[in-house]
Image (cartoon, rainbow, N blue to C red; front, side, top):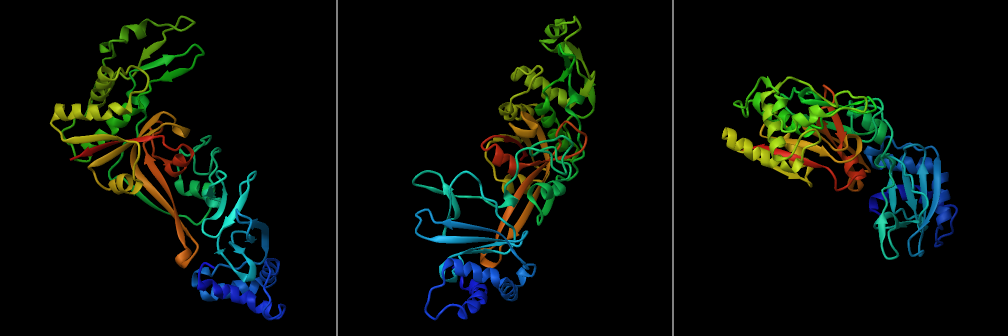
Length: 412
């Protein structure tokens, strides 16, 4: 058994067994299951009386029953799922109860053998020699496609989230609590097209804008340092964009579509002075013209900015990170900002400054058997709309492991 604490619940059905089982005779697994099913009220009452946290444990029926063996087929177990989200139990012979959870329910993957292990829980075959624990809980089995409540219309995956509370409820179920940390004073949610020098007309009549999301993100982060008072001497105001100074300007202007119309046209005759500094550096040092810039050159630009203005900024690209220590803990300070660079998913090949973070938590089980699950979210200025959006970072890392990065910019 997990603990002597569970003897309270076992005793409730064992008492019923005394009148039907001769003294000294073992209680078979089938008998144990029937005893629990036939004495469900006594079992639930005993659990509620022993543990105040189980006040909502009132199962009235059994919803699902599944037989399991261990991987060596030396022991048999019986899984009983109480109705709704009233929890579940695993029974063994002689009223042994290796697992009891008073909330939630499980769904098991189809198409492969599943066993129950007293130490690992439910497991599936990874190879002939190894077993892997299965994450069977509905609450932690997110889908990979579809638009959830709380997302923009038509959005798929784990981004473009407007209301993270509604999204979490729709995708992961109820019972989650959240803590939001918003970057103080962050007020800038521009669209990256506000800073584009060019637009390109395609042969099918569509218009393509510059892939300048990283440039816009670096500008927005630095501009935050300026207006928040961390780097007040950074330039403000607008200046002429001067696209004709680009070495590729003449080439762009000479190109035509299949119908003979200009392929490229200039836009935004004025841009923020600081953005032009960012853009011109990447043009001259990263071969930026119209498509995306390289995140790996971000730290080199920050070094250039230090030389230009006498700052003491540091910068690095993080391909692994601690959400708590690197992201969530830095939000309340003005000295460190992050740019999220998403490789796949909703915002494929897109960069966005992080302007907050949200942590959702949900605790299941009780006493020494309780455990807490966490969901991590980024609050971003996604450079596409003029209000904040959220990214489900936990789902992203689950669906696209070892992808994505943060560009960190820190004031010393």
